[in-house]
Image (cartoon, rainbow, N blue to C red):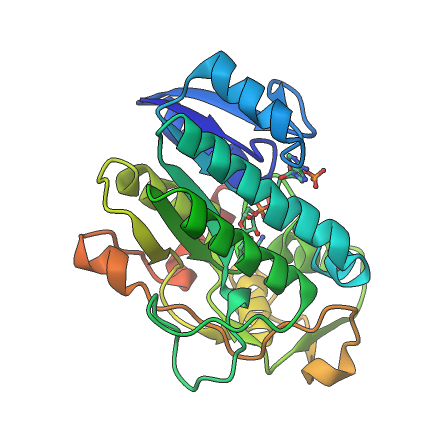
Length: 285
Ligand SMILES: NC(=O)c1ccc[n+]([C@@H]2O[C@H](COP(=O)([O-])OP(=O)(O)OC[C@H]3O[C@@H](n4cnc5c(N)ncnc54)[C@H](OP(=O)(O)O)[C@@H]3O)[C@@H](O)[C@H]2O)c1
């Protein structure tokens, strides 16, 4: 297959390019980065031209504005990139009669359920980033019948810019750590999501999927586990509640995802602890 991947310079996009290049012809596109086609997904004509130029068999669309606090401060920009950008990719893929895989977020749920969210639960976004991702989901569903929506959560990836590296860097810089105890989701390794997406796109089984490593954990326990495994067992991490960490974008409190749809077709995930161990074994910590 020929696969067009948006957001190809981002955390998940980079891994998707790597994972899918083995078996497929991959065209990576992004608004930033080297060795990718330049594409601003908010520019409808540019999306059409890129599609026309490359004639892919499927589009994988992880590109997004993922700065959740930025989205809270500028909700219109969030809708433009995450909503209208997804709509542009959905319309143009539908025009070429090819499927689209849209990457979404656990934040489309409000966090008030007392169990992990399945693919069949009601969405209810509670902040501007979440609303923009939900809007993107709806646009894709309305416009292109051949759609996969893959929701994921708390991604960690090689190459910087994620929670594990942020706490390790803070420890190495001698900073004291304070981490929230009452926000819960699934820490998830981009390598595992990319592998699952590689399986999913060969199936034609369109619909909504929850691709996360198994197990739900608080931010604090996630931090504690990662530090212990990296050898910093004696480094203290102060426990704080979510209201003690003021941010422009307050995430939903409890949004672990349950992978029911993928499991039913044999796409399963290892535990988040095994994924963190594997991640750390490949990093120089
Ligand atoms: N990270 C997480 O914990 C997490 C959790 C749940 C769901 N997700 C979803 O998973 C997907 C991938 O996340 P990620 O962490 O890999 O994101 P990422 O590292 O921020 O990558 C997204 C890429 O899209 C690019 N982009 C932004 N605006 C664009 C535009 N107008 N046109 C084209 N490209 C644009 C970004 O460029 P800039 O760097 O310049 O913005 C970046 O290279 C996203 O859809 C996100 O919503 C992420």
